[in-house]
Image 1 (tube, one colour):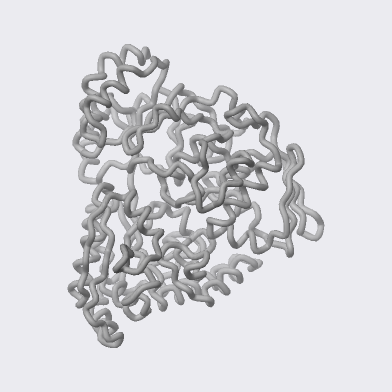
Image 2 (image 1 turned 45 degrees about the vertical axis):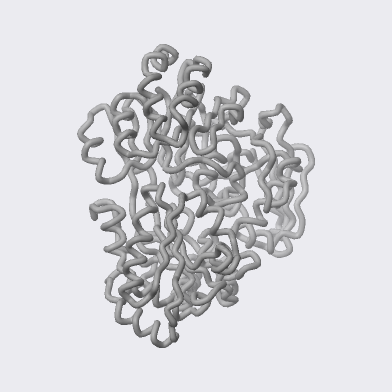
Length: 537
């Protein structure tokens, strides 16, 4: 395929597609016409725009997706959820379980030409360990970390059986490895450059925030020999260039995919799936077998939701079926599931989630409000209107809470504004918030260490919403050090029970989003994130 000819013939139509995005037609047309010719370009429409480039600074999935393009990891889960070495060639553990010694594989170098060293690894893991819940737990066991040449050494204070599992964390805050000079950036500040050692390089001069992100094949990347499986195995890049473009209108994206103007649509809405399924030139498949968990997260810092009874009342008011019918529509693509650690997993439990699944909690919600002495203070719910998978849930939740007796202030904003605002611990009168709704892939919530919402550290080390529940931290540590699956199940169920009792968050449904792509693409991988290696046109 001569893509330079293809782009030339399609540029007016693709320019029209981009005119529906946040970029003006003039700038979009100039960017497309002025760009160089490439042998093969894969064009994808993602679920949201890319704005935050530091994947350690935020849990936003677009930042995670960006991280997988340009960074690499020490280990990665395969499709059986088994950690596999990625940047690591081999590792040893001392007889007392206190010293982990990792040897990096040959051929690793950053995009600026510098070799990847153990010092880079140590600095990267330390920075990640400040931000991520599973990393924070790991760091409580770490006495020191060091690097020398291609060796990275982790010394523990006491044995910890989840070291490799932690380094293989697959989603949200992924432990990506970056140069030491970048990893030494405070974890509360964005890194100043996008330099990794991954299969793609960042094309900084073509980045248009909210409009387009561009990646080029890393010609110096040395893939592993094993077959690709989730984020593990050989990351063989088979196209020269990947472009993520933002299109604000679903119908425009549908038309563009059918016309061959884009190659890949990450999350088409369910009401358009019958049209895509009927087109033999389009492949539609669910790539994320664990699905997504959509959740409501109260802010425990400020009145009235600093009162657990108020938080529990909000949760009791919600009917998962109402949420999922509005979000997904077809029961073929959702499950009623009150399990905080995802249904159909070893840690699944229905303890505490009964009213969510049965939809019979309205009387309980009203009784809890009365018991709490709720005085009608408005509940500020942040409502992202620009992401299809997030725009409906706040409306349904707000109405359910009004039916229970809450006064609700539903505040519309774009998702990136919400991502920034949710980090604020300011009082409501100073721009704070009481609740937001977000979605997690199942791989981000399927155990108590990766699931940020059952973190009970409060405002110092907790996740947005910041409930302070010491018992949760005690149980999470017991889970982390437990020696058998039966023990882990026991601790996970107790964690879920307390989390519901404290109203720290609520899973308001499990759902599945198929991805659609031009059938000329081959090698599209399953996984908890969209991966663009292994794909050929």
